[in-house]
Image (cartoon, rainbow, N blue to C red):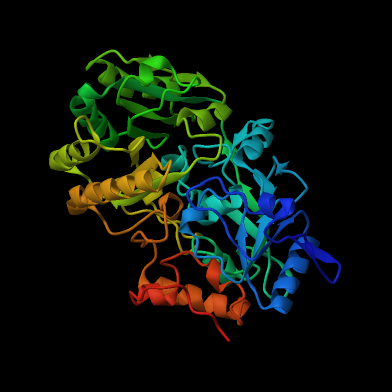
Length: 470
């Protein structure tokens, strides 16, 4: 089969090369299978695709990189729009704001900002799309200083169901601007976003690794340090079981290792190297690390500290937002994912929260802070259905082990699939966001593009897909 012409606008269907390109996802565990697909390069492409979907009685779905593909609803009767809008990143150094076309990756924003001595509240990978990361919260290694990345959004440009291009901000449709920032999508197709930047001339970043047999002492010392850690420091502690790949140092693949990574931002009152050394010296007192890459360097190096994969991979995992885990919680964590646990996870991590992460933003959207001490995430590579089932089973064991410290809340950008419990919004917030959706999408064209847990049925604990308006 080949592309189909709808009034001069061509969409692709299964069997066409353009369809394969438009439906490609980073997380190969959840392939995208819409009825039709298109890669949008311009705003006019987006408008034409929306018109095509309306005339064909299809719902519209949107993605850029497909990192969050497992969280999506099935794509039956859907036209998928892959955003790859042209234009490039533009930086206004006076306002410290970057305008970013939809589909842009964080690596491009980091490079553009660095030319002006600025940085963005990006995640741990340069291959992640900017728009989805930001509007789903965004947890940066600068986050304890800057807050959730979504609070840095200054404006959103999107095409709504009626085909209108809108630019919304704090003064132009503030209600829609509020709902867009953490509301779970389903408002239209974002074509560009403006994000605030911050000065970043000095940063200390990297990762240090130890044999997992030292995990108990290392975890304790790391937890003690996090209590009074400076807001400029954001770190994570991971138990890693890495595959023997050429790009991974041999000493890290001989068995499970414990890793502490992250970043410390240099500010007027903070020496990033000194603050990082305060943490690392406590950990080195337990045992010398197998490898230590922490150093003061350029901000772009923060993208490489967490060692996220740069090529598509099938990932299955889970996520919890935890309170202070105490000694019992630390023991439960290590018992579930540490030495002798039989864990099939390649990574089980605790991300340090608090600081600005926990501070509500008076000008923020529906999601503006996180109430929790740590974000747990665990993931394994699902090479086949049997492996995937084993990872899922072990994720449930970890969930049970950590249940006493589970807040019941989640971080949208950390949720791994649509079947997991999700809860970053309260019921009253969900209903308020639904009212905004009903205004901008009264026929439910984008109703299948809403994240699980972010529509009224979820607020009432009803299973299934979001309802379609008529």
